[in-house]
Length: 143
Image 1 (cartoon, rainbow, N blue to C red):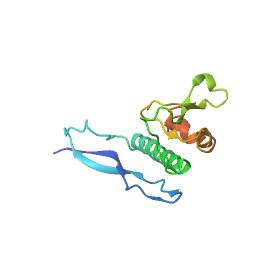
Image 2 (cartoon, rainbow, N blue to C red; image 1 turned 30 degrees about the vertical axis):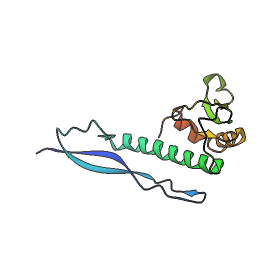
Image 3 (cartoon, helix red, strand yellow; image 1 turned 90 degrees about the vertical axis):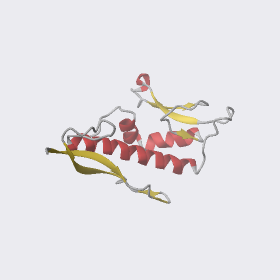
């Protein structure tokens, strides 16, 4: 029997205490799999470095989403209410000379977007998490 080493991201329980959060929520795990086993249904990597890049991206995404919850102070958008103001962060190459990110008002749900109660909160996210947003939006590659 031939065995190969593979790497995959493993998840810790969500751990938020007030405004503090763990940056190590997703970590690298090594496993050995019998050659020929179907691993196509999961995020399993032959290269440890590729797995670490995904883990960095996933951890960054979790941190940004946790910070958005703090900024929104428990607010959740009500999608049935088209009059409710909702703001999200978008990236536009035409704005790249400024920084590329802008705050947009949106009443339609877009999968993957983080929504904010106020334009001010969305702008605060851009100001304070600029590098993290560049990573999440695919403007820079994880290192």
